[in-house]
Length: 145
Image (tube, rainbow, N blue to C red; front, top):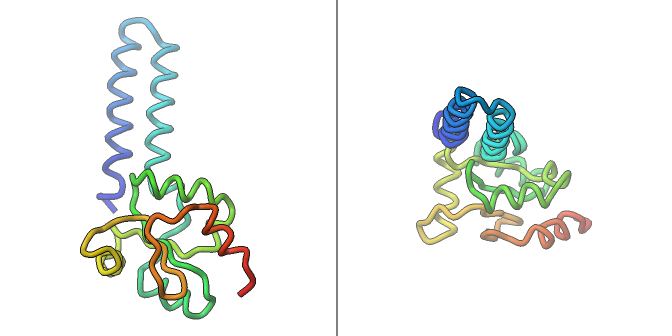
């Protein structure tokens, strides 16, 4: 858990420090706006924006049962964030695995990417797709099974 929250906490601490300095200098409006910006950055880079992660083994079991793809991701990854945002509500149709929380998930990603932990890696029908286009993935989700 701690690894996933390091970057968001750094954003909050930095924003708080800068906002405090501005507040002390007599610019409370600017301080509040800056603090809000840093808190938004923290929220975007936190695991909160993503659907609840499950373990790789559980995701593989569920995917075998329902045929839905598995997305391997990590907090702070801008490509994972792009995928999540562009999928919109369709993101709920996927099984999400945070590779920083699940060593088995990280191993799956390394096996699919020649030893690298390149995310997002989407496994669909047993075949990995590294950093797929969100529109392509949405089309795959809309196809009848």
